[in-house]
Image (tube, rainbow, N blue to C red):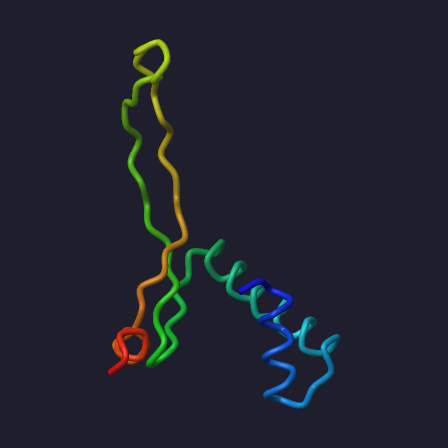
Amino acid sequence: MKKSEFITQVANRTGLSKKETEQTVDMVFAVISDALAAGDKLQFSGFGTFETRSRAARTGHNPSTGEAIEIAASVLPAFRPGKTLKDRVNGK
């Protein structure tokens, strides 16, 4: 599903205009992004948890030359689904 299809479905369910719905969806994504950038964890009961995970620096290899390269440490966004969401996806 693309963002535009998602917006259409939410607009149909809420009765809001597509423009209002798009602004709301954009703001939700912005709030989630800002919270993760600040290192916060977002927990939505029954849905899941958005959080960040640290990845340590490591040594990798260039596949074409075989040369060892250093890969810098990084912080990645992650999502852990809640039980209700997992059950729904699995048809329970």
